[in-house]
Image (cartoon, helix red, strand yellow):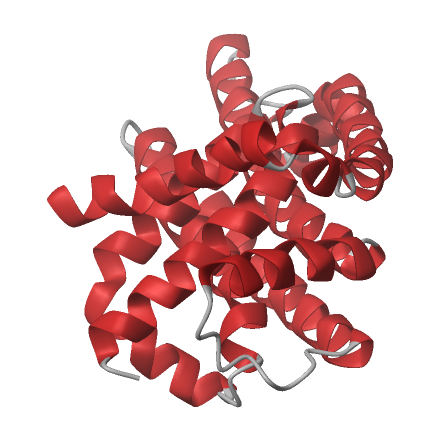
Length: 244
């Protein structure tokens, strides 16, 4: 738990840069705002049409007693919306980082320069950002499907789906956000995993608190620049622990 809380603190340290470097952090607002509003509109539309979607997915319940039909359709609707939230978080992260790559690059590079001894010599690159973004979305779809299926389990499905969804999405978000600082040091995906693996709780703490902030209305806009800053600090800490 101590490591998990320590991981959460990196987002707080990222937010501290709003006070120290407000002009730099403000660069990340525009892409986050544009993408965030699009995804928020999609979620609102889903919520509006959710009853109809639940009905369409459960035609077999038409002949059931009304109480059980309602219970089934509420469970299905909840599972669908929960899966959508998982997909929105990972997609928001992926798309925002691609759209705002020049702005977020300035943020994490400025922090690297400020802290010194960066060894961050390789450019991350736009197309690498696109490739990692697509990979994140594909993995997010897998997590969303698992979360949706778990949500259908009677009694415990909702809680189990939420726990698995939050944990898995948190890891994916942290993995994507730390990719820039680690890749710039010449690390391929497998080597990045090797550095992160011994510190799962710390990485998970950062990813979970970040994605929960993303779910707060308009919170994603202010959080994204802080998450980029915090992930840079986290990546450096992981490298120090690894002795790299």
